[in-house]
Amino acid sequence: MAKFKKPKNFRLSNPSKEKANTGKRWWFLLLFLLLVGGVWGFFEYGIDYLGRFTGIFNDSNGEEIVGVARDTLPPAPPLIDPLPEATNSTILEVVGEAEVSSELSLFLNGEIIKKIVVGESGAFRVSDINLSEGDNNIYAVAEDMAGNKSQESVRQTIVLDKEPPKLDVDFPENNQSFSGDKREIVIKGKTEDSAVITINERKVVVDLDGGFEASYSLADGANSIIIIAKDKAGNQSKKELVVNYRP
Image (cartoon, rainbow, N blue to C red; front, top):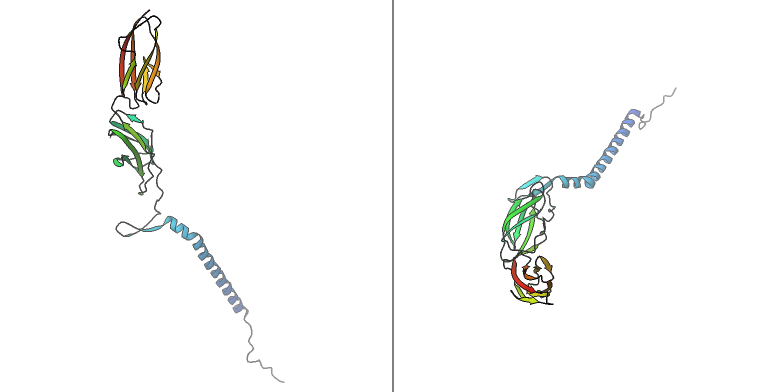
């Protein structure tokens, strides 16, 4: 009886080994996909978060420092309460608001005259500002703790004027007398174009040249007439007249 000879190149398959190889291929595929996904996620989101929360920068000595992202947002410009157009006082007080904890620099005619730290309320008050004769330009700048500076506040100009306005009364003359149908007279005079005129506390219109006129009814006997001119700075000039009327 002839014997069956197994071919030399014929090998029986090993199911367990094939299964192991298939499992390895799936694990390699899974690791590859995870690696690709991780790289994509880093470039998509990781760099942004890294830059947002971690920064590397050099200090003034050239040393490398690692920390949180630097604040580069400047504070809002300070707000200074409206100032009068003119004053006759050499001392001024400035009141306003600025960013909390910022350092406020107050400028007068281009020079820093005061530096203060703004409190928790955000309000500030600077007193004892010495003004110069004529125009005084005032503004402020705020600087936060990160060194960011705000834009200038709205500039305001206040005029220091200690001279009283001129006041000339053309008519009537002091101690002038009237009688008969001259009971009503017209008081005439001249002052500065920006001044306010009152005659016995009654306001009178002043024209563009500073001239003024006002009708005035005389009472019997002596009439006291008080004329006051007051400018924007609060300076005033005063004229007192006595006019007599006899029916």
